[in-house]
Image 1: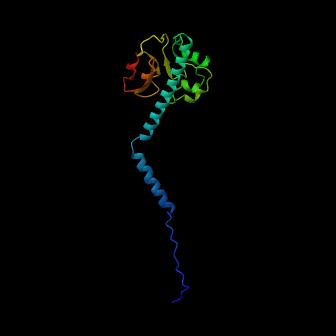
Image 2: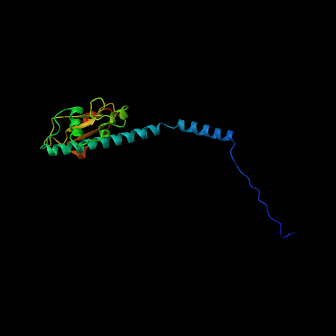
Image 3: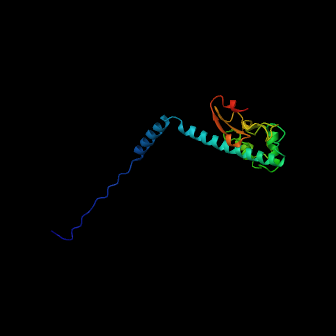
Length: 172
């Protein structure tokens, strides 16, 4: 036997052919299409959380406003009252007045004024710091999320998201 004999290992590749790759991808597409719409639910939940964050920023701006105006909040309902926050430099970012679930979200954030057409939140005027802590001061317009809504109260610790067809019953 020759001591110089080399062992030759054969290289074996296990590549998929194009046809096999297409079949595997088709099976994966079918499999994932059979799963319930968890992706949509997860993305809607993240949009609701972002919406609540926006609404809490509006709440903080309302609190700053009330501290400068002896416990009073802006005197006008709806977008007109919220525009006082923007023009008074309490909350200038237009994104904060728009729920990310809103279909016109991109148009809304390009405005330079808070208007009813593009504002996603309802603001209730006529309240002040002396009102009941259970008083809702701002909330989602009902079209923002199906069967779900965000509400901020004068008692800021109670603010949050509410689920169910009757979520608006939490507004007092």
